[in-house]
Length: 225
Image (cartoon, rainbow, N blue to C red):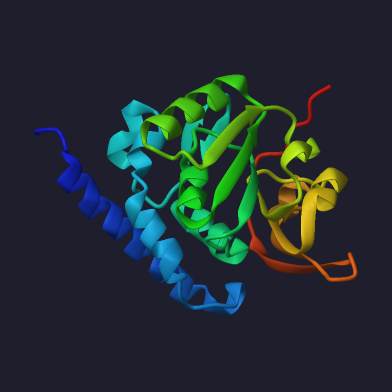
């Protein structure tokens, strides 16, 4: 069998987005919407996911499944990535903080939608790889740093939106402080056996309002020191 070329991969990418759209329709009662936002759909069609997974897995990059990327970590299932992005609703003039860069796929999707993405990764090898990949692909509006994601990135706060791709019992206080008034944070919350994808809105008076969307399973948010 001859190797797949960019045309083949583009067909698989379109199929991936179609499968994600099908999930939105089938799970509409649970997630509260039956269609993937058109901007998110277009971003996922543009971002070449096969460049953000280990080379040996490029041929299966567009399957709707999480994939191992090393260090006992995975890149999220495309449906979950799409759902979290859709719930976050990043605007073209907004700044986004991402916690958990991995190899950079989610950061690339966010970069297609927001003005600036700041992303923090606890594994130095991932951060180095993601930064090089994102730069090579022309994502000049993404900055990557190695560090403890629970501490956010205070130098660039406050952020319009925050996306956390790892689970914790509660939202780290530093992230809530770094979220703008009337900003939004999306992350999985709860113990390992009962995580719920959760939307946290910061109200005009500084209080927070939460909405639980659906059960998920993520790795735990790691701290340093």
